[in-house]
Every structure is written in C-alpha cells, then in structure tokens.
Length: 537
Image (cartoon, rainbow, N blue to C red; front, side, top):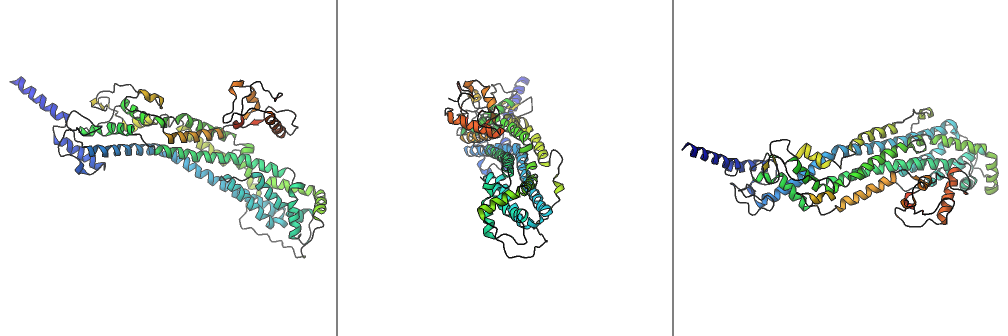
C-alpha cells in the first residue's frame, strides 16, 4: 500500500512538473506575453490545448500557444534580435559619427584660421592692396572647403583662379604703383596674362599639389568614416531569412509554449542559430579588418605634404613667397605686360586711403607656428586607437550576442530547441556562409545581396586608402602575379612612354629612363610577362 502511494505521488509530481497539466503555467505565459507587448491577451488559450496547428513550436504535449501567438512570437523574436544588433553596435556607431563631426569641425576651423592668416599677411605686409585681396582670398578658401567636402573641383584650376585675380593687384600696387589704380580694362588684360607669363613662378603649382595631396587624404578619411556608418546601418537592419526567423522563434519563444518562460538556450545551440542568421554578416569580417587597418595606414601617411593641417596653415607663407617672386621679377613682368597690354591706362587720381577694414577678426601670423603633432593628428590617433578595439566586431558578433545576452550561463539546464537539457550535444559550426552547410539549426541558402553590396563598397574604399604601388615593387613580383585588377589591356609602347614622362616629372629630369619609384595606379596594372623598363615592346 505504501509503495502504491509513493508511485501515485511521483506521477502527480511529474504531471505538475511538465507544466501543462496546470492552467497556472499558461497564466505565467499570459503575463510574459502582455509584459513584453507581444500581442493582445485574447490570443492566448485559457487552458493548455493540442498544438496540431503550430508550424514551428511543435510539441507532443499540450501547449499554451495558438497559431496566432506563434506568428506574434516570430515578429517579436525578429524585433528582439534587431534591437540587440543596434544596441551592440551603438558604441561603434557613436564613435565613428562623433569623429566625422569632429573632423569636419576641425577642417572648418583650420580653413577659417588659414584664411585669417592669409588676410593678415596682406594687412601687415601689403596693406595697400589688402582690401582688394580679401575677396580672392575668401573665394580661394571657399573653393578649398567645397573641395574637402566632396565637390569635384580641379585643385589646379581653383588655385590658378586665385593667382589670376592676385596678379593685377600685385602689378598695380607693387610692380608698377601709382596714386591712381589701373583701369578695369587694363587690369583684365593683366589678369589674362597670368598663366602665360607665370609671375609667381612655381608657387601656384606647388600649392595646388600640396592641397590636392593633403585634401585627397582628408576627403578619403571622411568618405571612409561615412562608409563605416553606412556599414553599421546596413547590418543593424539586416533582413533575416525565413529560415532564420523560424530558428529565432524556436530558440526564443517556443519554450514559452511549454510554460518555460524563464528558460534560456544552450550556448552551443544559440551559437549555431546566430551564426546561421548572421552568416552573411560574418563575411564582412575580413573586409572590416582591412578597413580599420587601411585607415591606420592612411593616417600614418598624412604627414608632411599630406598633412592637411600643415598645408592649410602654411598657405599664407606660399602666397608671401609668390608675391616676393613677382616683385623680384618686376622688370621682366613690366616689359611683358607693356608688350602685350600696352601702356597702363590709369583711373582718375584719387587720395589713397590708409584705412583697411576686414569683415573678420584676424589673428597674428605668429599664431600659425605649431608644435609637432597638431590637434588634427592627435584626434586621428585617438580615434584609431578606439576603433582598433572593434577590429574583430563582425567576426565575433554572433558569439558575443549569445555570451552577453541570449544564452544560458546555467551549467545545469538549458533549452536545446526541443526540451530542457543539461547540455547541447549537436555539432557547433564555424562562422561564415560556407560553414553553415553543416549547421543543424539554420539552413543558409546563400549570401545576402545587400551585404554583398556593402562588401563591394568596403573593398573599393580599402583599395582607395591603400598606399600606391611603385614600379620597384612591380618588378620584384613574378610576372604571373602582376595583372590588371579591372582591365585586361596589354602594356604597349604608349603606356611605357607615359610612365617615363611621369617618372621624369617626379624627379625633375628627362623622360629617358623610368625611375624605380614611379607610382602606378592599381587600376592600370597589367600582365608584364617578359617586359622590363628597358624593353617596352
């Protein structure tokens, strides 16, 4: 009799433990359902019911779920994961966005400072023409600002326009001065001669080269950071496949149907589900790593002629050099102007004002002297140090989400997709699309087209921010390793002639030989079987 009583008590305990012999279990499901705002409470059954109509949360036992609840759970599971993705990336996104704004503000501050230095130069040293020079100076820095912000300006042209406008002023005030200025018609003639008589020597070309080099680096940095934000926005709103949505439902909410509202998935189970759902995202990993490294390389090259801060704050010195060069060559320039424009016609004589005004407050020229390692360089260094912490972000995202938020840390029990167990026994697959062939939880059909597009953009920016190759690097490679990345043209005589000309320009010599440091763009690298610098054909 005692043995029979013990058996009855044991069977009753088992029924209660299974959960669905009691309406209280469904009451707990109802509370969680409403608390998480998954859907209206009338969707829940008042008592456990057969689950024959369920598609994912299938169970042999009675269930607290209906088909409508299952649909709502699937929406909730997708929402939960997207919220987790956005939360996990928020610090990275904030880091990049904050520094985009900071770099843009730094560029604007540097431009304002450099413009003031240049205006101050004229006010302090060439005061008779300072008011007239202020307009061309401001136009120059407006054009540089637009160039840095992405406008497709020709730097040579915008710099030359400034010096074109400066030449009549220098001619009128310093080379051939008088109490009355030259007439507008004669000033226009003098302006038109600027490019042929080259009154400022090589300064315009040198300045244009410096602005182009440093400006391109600055533009690339901003473009790369904007792309970084685009990558994060894309992955934050990843479109989950049907198979992934069903797997997330099974992992997150199917245990609720059995009254197990407090259970969490086993770690291995969670990793399989998340690596399957984020398989396309994991393909970003190698390109994201290269993205971070290429930004470090770009920043390391932004010194000397490629240091935007140094170049901008040195513009006034080059302008000063240009004006002195014109003064030094005054007699020659006067003769050329007289020959081509005739004797200068003067405006009626008028008193020359010594009052000079400016719409902006200027700062002393001596303020342009800066210690090595300017603020912009330090800001880049600090940013890249922080960004380096996210080098493996996409490669470890699935595991991080499971370890920090999703999976059970309880070594005694966890949900394996079917029931509560001590441990997950199926194989845990690796990261990436290829590894998902063996995934027992999620079927992955292929790469996400949207992710492929963002990977292509990362490849492009990584190529753009990579250092250029030199011919010396190319000759050291085996012929079969050197081929065109985007074209399949042969390297003909015309190409060799162009490379020789570029080489001559780089070293200031003739085009007879090709210097070993001639830079070759990646886009025109071609197969070089049997070719050498001395045998173009």
